[in-house]
Length: 149
Image (cartoon, rainbow, N blue to C red; front, top):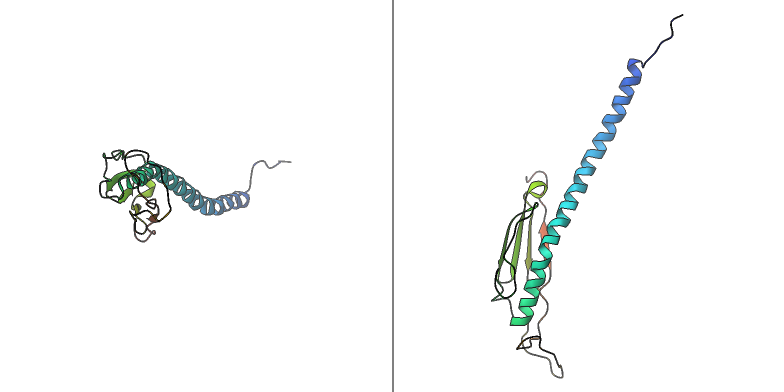
């Protein structure tokens, strides 16, 4: 008698169906994972500039003189996921590229910055003047939906 070797057509179709279902679930999840990793990289690019603007605002009593390339703020650079960056006064803006195409992140000043010291407060100066200011913090991100791309 002849023994059958190999797989039947039904068995192959079942395997192909299982692979199709797993890839339909797995590929979008993996793309989201890659996008989140890229966003993390973009935000890490953002951190030194945010810190530099905070320090500039604290040292100079405001953000009027806190532009790119001045007062300790580095000049903007681009990375794999950052296509453009601008730093002007109290606004730091980044634009995404590759998997973050269409993403923009903007840091703006949060609230007002008082320049007078409260009564009874003693502060130390790191350079020549001391200012009582709130740190510049807060950023907002807008991620476009698939329909907006």
